Image 1 (cartoon, rainbow, N blue to C red):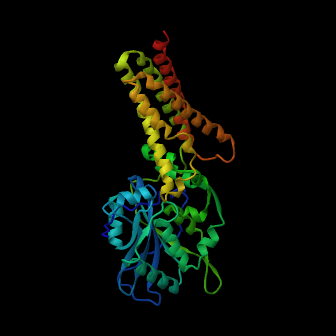
Image 2 (tube, rainbow, N blue to C red):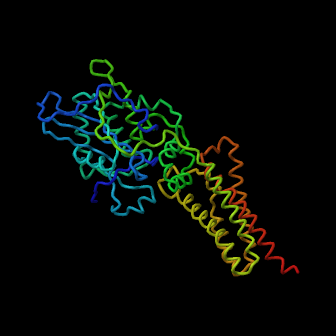
Image 3 (cartoon, helix red, strand yellow):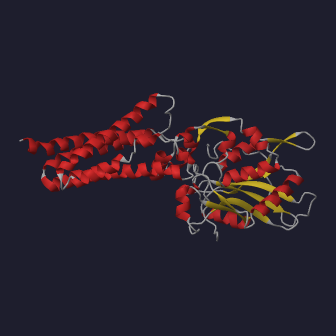
Length: 425
């Protein structure tokens, strides 16, 4: 496979108070001086963190491990966020949740030039590792970058560019990062962070609100939070490691800002979006109800009245296929999704029967019966929110879907009565 540098996809979710609570040590880390003599400890290791970018997949930030070697003068930045739209089977892999990402090393100059051009912040934290730990880390990243080892199957929350950096550091620290942070519970969830970071992109926000299931609402640990580069940076800033003499020392010896970006930081918490979705749902319901009066005005009126109903029902039906089809993929965070009550395959049948009724009005009767079932299931999804087992954060989908489903059912039933009237006269 041929890889080419892309704007690295920080974890989404996939999906953290990006940068705002990052602790900056008073003593800034010193960059390696050119021509410095070779010391007994020739390697200097930095955690490099890049701020969010403009594209949706860059809104989560990025990170890497920078290793300076006094012996060779090399400054290599190793990152696990490389992918290509041109990779073989990109779309099928994306659909199946088995996207291939890769690990590569680039020079510090290349790295800083890319992120400066994108207007993104770049910070470097010098890590107080022992000489043996630095050598182990250097061997690990070079071995990982070999063609046989560099590719991996990406997961937006559990295995991404940031968790790979975290795990590489944890390996040389003997598992100390996981032992310390896995037991620290946060007040955040996978969904909370994802909503916060993608709320500037309405379509992406809506799509994630639809597909992310109950697992997205699990309260996560500080260790889990490190799927976000900025949270890894913040958490490690206050982390102490045991030294060979038994003393405790901060892992981060200092921090310096390598690039001052222009992008700014995303919101520190997600906005409440469901009221806007409710307004949209009510406006859509009002439009469908208003156009419904045209049903009586012959085939032309039926066409104008039916197309919006069919379009909504067809869209919902396609969404249902996506939610059900997720069980055939590795998108395991899409499983156990309460939105299956608001998006069911029955809506596809509603759309088909409604369109056919433009020519044969009697077919509106089965469409009406199916629409009632669709509305009833959506109402059930709303009622089940009273039970503790149905706590998925899907208020946006509920607020949008329920008013539209109810109005579609009422409208189609009224049309069914109209279509039945001539035969009773």
